[in-house]
Image (tube, rainbow, N blue to C red; front, side, top):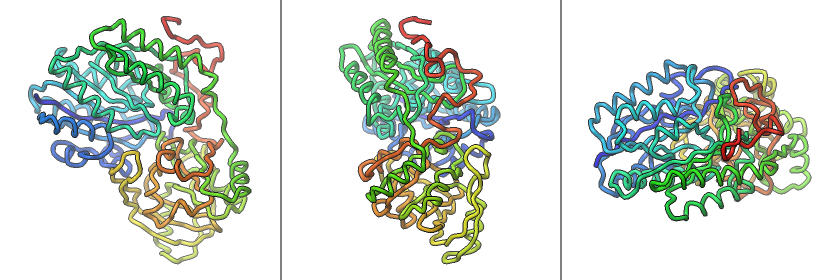
Length: 501
């Protein structure tokens, strides 16, 4: 048996400034860039990403792998069509060179948008399907924030989405996908698919699976997976920052040869989510209120989640609203991670460690995340910005922030970097000699992923009400291509479940 493995992953924020280029995929914003062949296998073997799970299961089973390409670009704006076409050409060329294969595993995100395609993953799966023919099974893993379409569900043999947000089960879902593919190739199962969209947009904090209502949704998902004839159940909360027709929540169920069973189960989950839609409403806290409450308690670390400027969702990561509030209130023992500002980094490096200097910090990408701040401070540390994740999410994955600087203003430590990265792993701070457990307040450019590593040490967590292109309040966006009506943009929107329009 020979199995092809590969992936092209991007989470596209269509409201973000600028386009995503081929360079963004090759240098990949601090993560491993475009890889193929043995480099792909050697780099991702043992890493907690879906392809790491593929590799583990296939190697344990003694199955020959045909590595194609694997690339991931940091979430950002619409993907240039030329970049997408180059990547899909490389993937298909490697597939052609691999010769006949018995199955294909695709490591995709599910929310990529190009200049010409609202559903890039549907296009990838479709083109791979045409290349291998109708008889070769294709199983794809998807992020929990995938905007799953009918085309994706129809063209793939099976779709396997993450069960967790923070995404700590990436490798497990990859392993599940690989086992399902092997069983399909060997004739033990015949996957049939049920697909149901839920007519809802859900802000990221409410997609967190550590708390209700998502915790309750996945309790149902796992109960259904235990039923006879059901192979897997995927619930995707969707990525509301992609202005495409099919943005939003969806369910995919894979059954063993029973399409009716799969559809009934998909509708059951969709209906369960819709009936609890009021529980998905957001409660955000103004940064000044959160900071005052943290200072009054005196117990840390208190985490301020600036999800609106989360680079993990396409934001520029140079917003200053949270930082300005910390400085204005004189917050003690505080850290802001991170502000991606190559100009400020260069000036701090030129000044040198130990220097007192004035920097223009942040607010340089656009006017939607706060203004640049002129700050007089102290350069405490300069680093190469490299570390490897040690927390439970994407464990072992190498990260490169570019040159990184710790710049001190009052009692606020500001982590300045050349590159945008989401600092969900505490190694982002520890690699810079900042011990999170010793801080009162830690402001993170992250929506939910930080909870995997920081959650156990946090005394309190606040989801901040700040401006930005990744604001959790989905009612703020000027959607043009999204299907309407949809909840909560329209309170009286129909569910779309069980054939309801």
